Amino acid sequence: MTETSIIPVFFATDENYVPYLGVSLQSLIAHTAHNKQYEICILHDSLSEHARQQLSEFKQKNVNISFLKVSDHLQQYQSRLKNNLAFWNQPTYYRLALPLLTANYDKILYCDCDTVFLEDVARLYEQDIEDNYLLAVQDADHPYYIPERIEQMKTELKLADTSRYFNAGILVMNVALMRQNNLFDRFIELRETIKYLPYHDQDILNSACRDKIKYLSRRYNYQWHLDFFYNDPEAAQAYRRNIEPAIVHFTSHIKPWNEPKREFADKFWYYARQTPFYEEILFRSIAKQKLGIDYTEIAAATNRKDCLSLLRRYKFIAFFGLGSARKKYKQKVKTLKQLLRNTAALCRL
Image 1 (tube, rainbow, N blue to C red):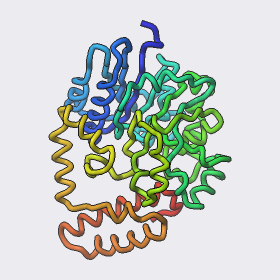
Image 2: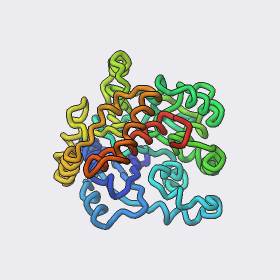
Image 3: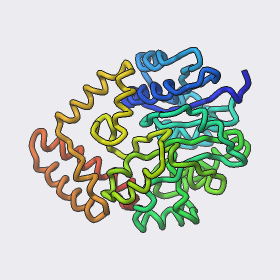
Image 4: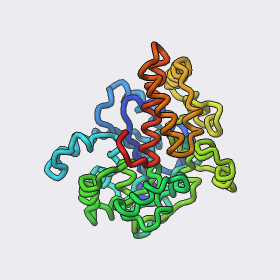
């Protein structure tokens, strides 16, 4: 079997996200071609034996499932990572280590776990990457970046055209070229020198790869939150226009397992019902609803002023509230702080 008929797909997860990864795998496998071999590798640091066994059950004749404990492989690079080895063992940074972890491949596909596949991923993987580091889709949030974020992207990430900032949830990676040009060393350098990285490894990838990116149709990374997050129906309609998503990416803190009535949530639940994780996902969803955390107010806060006003109110209730109300608003404070960071409010709250 030649390498061109092998589709290497990498995911990164922790124990908590295993059920949602299972849904993503189920949807991917549902659209595989019989004449191709899909090599799925799950990056992790400490998955339990039970979780690995559950995920291994997705194996099929043309779908292999393997696991790679990232910390074991990064030990040999400890001197280069200096005092940050524990930091690099976080799942959100595993993408950056992929050039080191994929010596058997020249090109790979990386996918976030909060995704659903609606066509064969081979169509994406087999696109010509040419002499680029990445195939990627532009970030849907760009029109809503606050001025401080735009300035930070220009000065610290060195992005001359900030509209070309991409979402790193779905990437075809030219790992051979990355190894050839020692891009991992550049990742380390940026991690150590950039003062604030609100989007973590995504910011690093955008900065390090900025001159060697080939952009794809948004159908390959359809970022679902634009439909509702910014209360901008015209922008949402324009984003959806003439697009049949190949991969739906459940971006933002609002997820289909907690918001089943939103558009494309039905795709998630369709595949969830076909997995051994369905009851667990359903139980988590019911427990979340029972706690009574409604994120409608947060989703409707379309600017920094609104967010800060909500944050002050939530902090007050979280401090003075009792019982379940206190617990609920502590969670809301946490969510809203993350939202402010992700929209690049460049301050520590």
